[in-house]
Every structure is written in structure tokens, then in C-alpha cells.
Length: 341
Image (cartoon, rainbow, N blue to C red; front, side, top):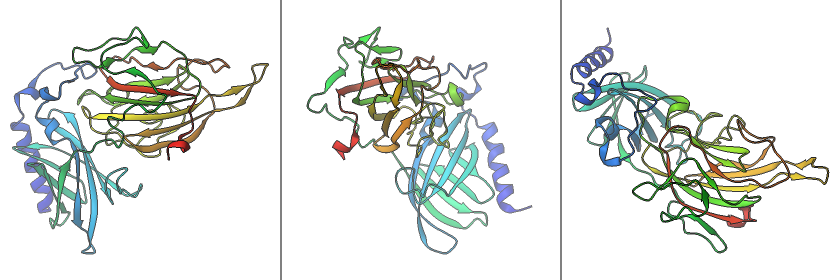
């Protein structure tokens, strides 16, 4: 039996007997267990995240590599190793390798048929299947390129933490953040929108139950919000036009990081007989990276309202998960991102 396999089995056995007390909780509802305070996270959260650096590949060459580690609850994890760097920062968009593992003592051990990774003290030591040391990756915390963007000339500030006057039924948290289930008071046609959002940490939840919300443009077209960190970037994941168009790249950061959407929207056009003559168009930057590039939206998405000639409001969807928002501003009449490139 290969030494690598024996070593992995031993470490996983150790992880079972060294599970912290928080993982021993019974009857945790994965759909409701959510941490919204970064100061209240569990042990797993500190292993989760992104790692970046150079490794020595099989040709004895240095190769920039990225790693995303996703907490799954009870000390269990999935991970993705990216050739060339992280999504939006060097990854070639094709070559990646999925791993899984668990906490063993004070380390997290991840493995597949090709790699073994041991994470401790914010470093991910990587070895190949022959146990040859390839190097290590450092834990990094990326920020959106547009985080904290100030309103441009002509913008209307929809939310700055002090008032919900521009929203119907808007509610503010104790620390000045906007809750989901908020609807703009005024309808929109063409616009540029900036907003920042933070996803709760929900390690037990999966799929559409993991930090789900959305930006419903004119209540017709949804730009999905979801904890899609480390996933493939599908039709129902972060940055997607829900069930209509996948994001060009999955730019979702780990939960509890502040993230940004910068959305440029041009409304559909109709003639005097209310017949559509041009589809709506949309460009979306997720954390400053293009994920929808002047996409022509063929119809309403998911559960959105039917298309029509009139304007519509913007809804921050309530999906039973405590997603929060801040720094929201809009420029009406400017749906073309070319003016800012």
C-alpha cells in the first residue's frame, strides 16, 4: 500500500478523534446555521480561503498556483488547485484539480490522486503523489477592485448606512447595513449601479441554500447572489444571470468578505404596439472583474416579472439567508460601461 495513502488515512482518523466541541453539536439545521459576525467564526473558517504562490512542477519549473479552500462543516473541506493563479488573477480558465480532506490536529490535510496539501499557520504545503515537496502557498485575502467606490458625478446615493428613504420596506441592521427584501422606491430604465454585499458563513449548507439572494433588475432580471466560493460558476451561482447565462469566471470571494457588483444595464425597447424591438443588455463586474460582458438578455429570468415597456424597480431578494448590503449608488441614464473603460 503506498505510503501517501497510509499517511492520509492516518491523518483522517486523527481528525475524527480531535474534532472541536463546536462540531459535536447535534441537529444543526444546515439551512439556518449562519454566522454573520466575522468575530464569531469557528475554527474551520480560519483554514478556509485563498492561497497563492509558486510551486515546482513536474518539469522542475516554477509555476504560479492558486488554491481555494471551502469549509463544509464538522472539520471537513473541499478545495480547488488552480494552474496559473487564482480566478481573475492568473488562472488559465481550464486547468484545475479538486481535493477534499479534514482537520487533523492543528493542520488541515487535503488530498486527491495527484496531490497532498497540509495547511497550518496560514501556509499550504503542497506535495505530489510521490510525496515530493513542491513548495508552499500563502494565505491571501483579496479585495475587490471597486470596494469603497465613491459615487460619481450625477449619482444618487441609495444607501449609505443612515437612511432607507430610497427603499420600500428597507431595514437597517444594528451596525448600519441594509437587509435583504428591499425594493427601490423609484423605477429604473438604463443605469449604472454600484453595490457592496457580504455573505453569511454557512458551512453546512449547499447549493441554493448557501447564502442566497439576488439583484432583481426591474424585478425582471436577476443577477444571482450566492456563496459560490470555489464552485464551477453555473447558471444559478454568483455572477450568473439566473438560469440564463453563466458568469465568464467565478469571482466569488469567501463568505464574510465584502464583495462588489458594478452593473451596467440598458433596458429592453418596445414599439408603440408594445412589441419588443431590442433585448435588454447587461454588463456585470464582480469584484472588479467582468463576469457578464454586454450580454443580450433574451427574456425575464427565473421568477422575474414579465418584460414590458415600462420601467421597473430594483429588488434585493429575500431568500431566508442574512445577506447584507452597503454603499449602494446609481447613475440613471448611463447603461454603457464603455464610458468608464
